[in-house]
Length: 307
Image (cartoon, rainbow, N blue to C red; front, side):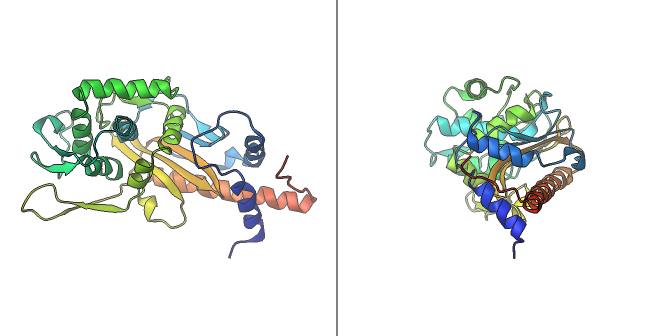
């Protein structure tokens, strides 16, 4: 059962929910959210990721560390890949075949999608987002009108339109370390991705069985974000990433006590570090808001939801 103070915080913050992208303009709701976040003590949040940003949908920053430093983003790239594919309104039931051109000759990473595997564009997109399937992402870019070069140009054009001034994309999968961005730019990208129901569904799916080869059994793919298996989280969008140069990366659109929030964690050392950092952020927010609401109640201050 929820404690009264937690329930009060939930009721207050639920008033801020708007199920679309970020609203960076100053509004009464944004100001109310900011007053809540100002009760959080950033000194109490100890994260291990090199760069981090926690920002609400109004643009209020709860926490930041090196949020404007450009660094490799690995497979977080695939969120941009998905948006470009969906913007093009290509037929999602069209079958795409994996070719030698989709193999990773840079890092020689493996894949269960052998050359000759055939899946629909929809299945390729889901595997790229949910399981970070590199060959699926490469095939999506290659099969774009004009080929991979045109696809990369579309990625960078989309980034420019979103105001991601410190971002640059080289390939669809994120295997090239020259796919770079900042935590602040990535927060904008995640908020934009919330406008795509297909991305929300794919990134939060637990698993998917596919049959890429005839006369072969199904392949089961699972979500790379282990937090998706934790009922204490409310996650609407999720994407992990890893290459040596980028470290472990994690971006998520989630809710804290009812308010839409994005977490960006970049260059974490250790396979479990970004998930540990995400849990530390959640506990820090929940405890800080609860403490602030309790103090307001003790002093007799009454929050005014219409101010």
